[in-house]
Image (cartoon, rainbow, N blue to C red; front, side):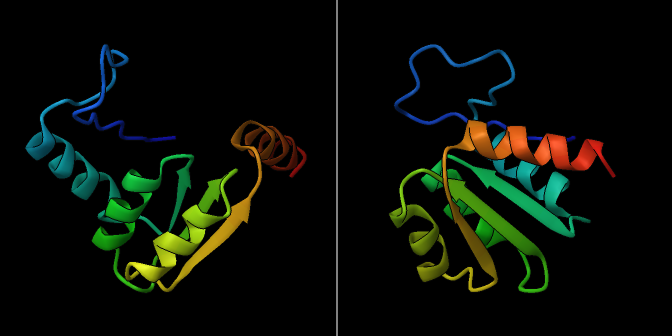
Length: 103
């Protein structure tokens, strides 16, 4: 599953996969989102909002976060097609993987 990890000014020792140059990160987002039909945004409010703002309205976006304010903020900032799931991201991914492996 393709993914993009963009850094921020607050990162103090990002993971090796993190793109710390914001122009490069935005280009990577655009490349990965180009043909997307569904996007999962997991546990990162600012990245979820930025991703939602880059998507056309017909692309489905699922925003998963333990904080109920995050999916609301994603929708309020222009991503009306977003569906919010308020739960622990680890639990969500575990259940999603189990469901997908049985089909």
